[in-house]
Image (cartoon, rainbow, N blue to C red; front, side):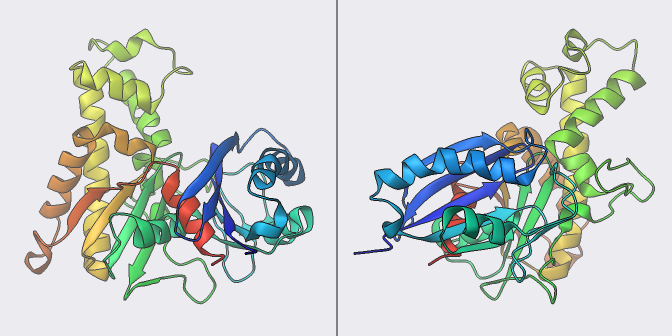
Length: 317
């Protein structure tokens, strides 16, 4: 039978993950490439092609592929374009589905990367039986997918649900990609955790911390996590502050759509309870009584790369 498989591609701010998926939602094979090493999107697509085609041949060639679904920052499901994505190297409006279709000679569809992750959770993950939930992706940036009545909210222009760019601290930290000040992404992303670490180290020059063993260029959210697990006071304060910002934001989102659950997804969730406990505490503290103790905050049960790959591939079926 032809068209046994679909390709799912997740374009992240740092890494692009992709895989061959069968009609039952099983990822047959997957791989990844860096997202930011190519000045021109065409060169990026060429590297993707070089890595994907051996995987395609391994399942019998293009005759067995129904199409390519892609999730990307600022991906427009209506036009198939990536538009002014702050975390990607390629600026302006990128006609991604046109380029992909021409390169691979396969049908292609595009949506926002966090929307793809939400679809993956809804079809195959911890939100499988939910009709009302929000997925928050905590990676290089902060993305979101809002599901109401079992449908992804995309708005009239395809860009609804950019919760990561909502302003949670007016006049606060500068987001270098957008020029906005005080957005959630500036604080609750892996990049934001690093910025908070730099700020606190500078703010408390006399305070001992394991974080001083690293140069500013070496600091990452992973290093902050490792130091926090060793009991480092400043590293723990970083996660407490990050959880406060995220929790306050989630309270706003809950009062907007009253979801059954908020699914946290992405690299920053590896911090586990270091992030979850302050997030839940500050969310509940900022909710009206009618919303309190109703909304679960849960980590994705899918492998980090799987939800977005599965969701992107589901665009094709």
